[in-house]
Length: 433
View 1 (cartoon, helix red, strand yellow):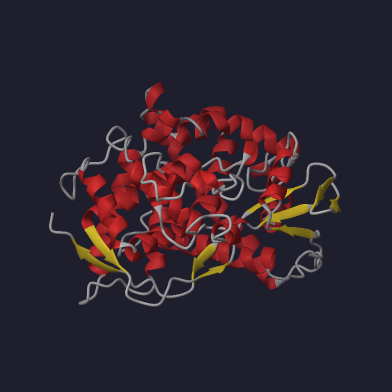
View 2: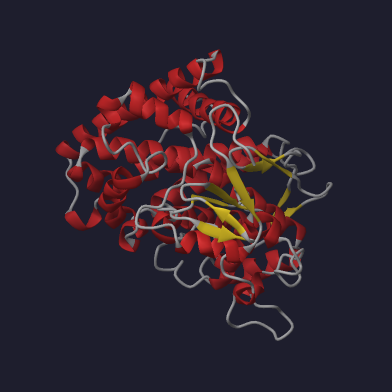
């Protein structure tokens, strides 16, 4: 596909053998271009904040490798993630209180329920990235909470207009571009202030070495690293997590037998609807994890993975030069009966080792078709966080409510991520016990 308005040409592939070839030849420093506007802002307008590292979302080559090497031991450590279960669950409980009040006389949620899921994801990310509560779930929001919510929403909307749709911004700084730069500025300043607050808080009340949060560990490395990672987590971890959660909730609402089976598993660790969730009791929930995995297969947050070729390669008989952007369209293949047996069915059991003989195995499909968190050294650094968030919110919702979908089939439209195109009027009926 030819590039337009200053963009590079892009190759679209729908073959998993091509996917593997691209991934296997990506080299030491995988290149994944994307948000050029964010890269411009960080490199040209705020170098005093982002410096040489820039961030995991926007950087390539050695600068990306330097940042990834610094943050990997913090972000990929299972022990660190376990420290957040109570805090993430606290946000989920508050969200469920909101949900109870949103239902109408038919026990249905409002059509804009997706905005509330986005608020839940943003509030949770405040805890994970900054050890703070933004307060965006409250009905009496502070002005700062309203501003953070508006800024994050604005960034996604404007980035889609400038980085995905045709735009002249690389030749002429359009009003939309200037609006986005101002929005980046305002959010960056807020996050820097939040990090400063955290520094003061930590100086007054230091945490024991084994219980330090992601933010505390990053601050020990470098304050700029902490700011950059907080911003990257906000940019990469809100719409993706909320999109995945909405798709999975729809799958469970449309498949009451699977939902009931999941609830039975949850009762083994949650005898009561308000039983606590802990890192320990959540260890053995294979069906919950299978539901999440199958939900991501059916309704992934993005259309596929993206990489630039690490060297000259041949795809489908065509010579593809080094540094050519490739879109690997896995979403289409994940719904293809030739690739996944019974692909149109929501079958969490396909991901279980212990399953009935008539249930196809997800492992029978080419493994490069379904990579929801990417592949290799540039795979999603927030995978553990995202899975924890989705596990906790799903456990809370399904343990307390029986979800139903009474309308036309769920549809999505692609922006920076896949989002619902029809109202999310889930019916939620509280279970008896």
